[in-house]
Image (cartoon, rainbow, N blue to C red; front, side):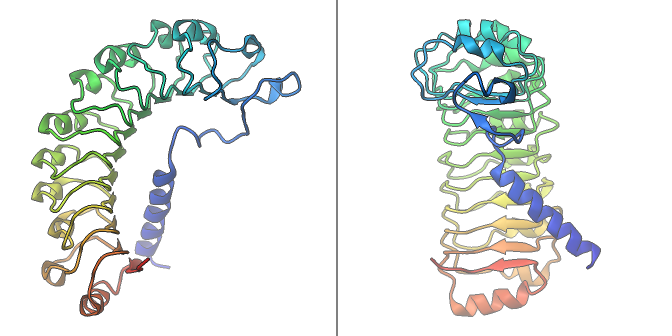
Length: 313
């Protein structure tokens, strides 16, 4: 097998991993939803979501090595009391606080010195500027801000340089300044901008040139800016948009290996794909109205690709 083939396999593996990456799947051990005498020593992951809790069970104090805690969808929880109880746990790496009507996190979150993954999804009243100041010194790598009705990112997001994976799905992140700020996160690896009602991407998307996996699916995009040629992205998910032809900019992105363009309105492959040399080597065009003539053309153009798909469902 050639070195190039190994590279493609590596990229596909990373793409699959990134697509499934979430706060729920790290640290592989059983997830418990109850604390019982016979399982206390085994609990590393604890899911207490949707249990109508007003406070954490007293028995949580007996857990010695808690790594992941999910307390989502318990709207009557007293978070101040919760974090006082959690203060003993400098072992927590994953904390899921979705759908809790959070505005401001308790200051005691600073004591969770090993916290790497924080989910604050579906808290539309959240004061991000205040909370970013609180968590700025924590080693946050995954930050989930999904569904928070965000249109503007606070300037102090750049004070959390440890962020690698940032989920901004189901918001309305559109303006140029947002992308300039995202470009100031030096370790940003995966960025979710799906379901953001995007009609277009501003040229400033090129500022986010450090991102390797970009999710812009489920929007209303018809074109992509030529400035994306400056990006070092490996994989782009752009399905469920309004594209009518394969974007030309993909031929100028020197690191791009794989693109998902499923469920668009693509019916033509631009002639630039006949003349240019490019790194793209995997293309999914499922559920697009591509004519048989264009399919034959594409199969000839992309015959060296490790993945080429036109499935219709």
